Length: 211
Image (cartoon, rainbow, N blue to C red; front, side):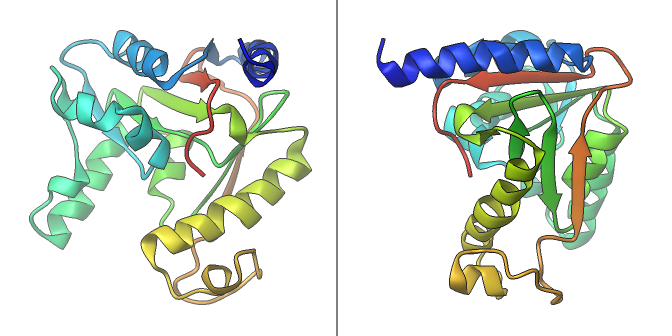
């Protein structure tokens, strides 16, 4: 085991315990392969599944596995029209399992997320029976201030590049606190506790995943 792997394991176990104190289920696994196994273990056969935009889920192979698996999949990418796209996004708010990641997470288990349309944040707040997140250890920060800085100055600019939005952070690589029509920083969500025990299920992964 390398020094970085040992560090990630020690910190990952600490973060998992912090999440459990916040009424969330949590596990630490060393690799993305083990993360995929854990996600599929947690998804009951026949359940309805949807997700928000997440590079992490793609990198781990979750979306491909779910699309090919024994689940009722609500996939907005399969929509044949803008109207169907919107309908699938609304249906996702009442699915059994909503999949995603987080823009940042503190060492003591607080989740920080920023969104433009906020369909992902809406699902995290209320609706789906379960929210299942896969989170690389690169997203763990010391405290809430650092988590917000990460979300605004790293995750948001990278996502602006990914989706080719014509907004200031795409051009300069850091948050400019813009107020333009295409801004992706419309909604900020801090999740510090799950009122429903075990609704949030977090798989921490000892790799750098997503943005």
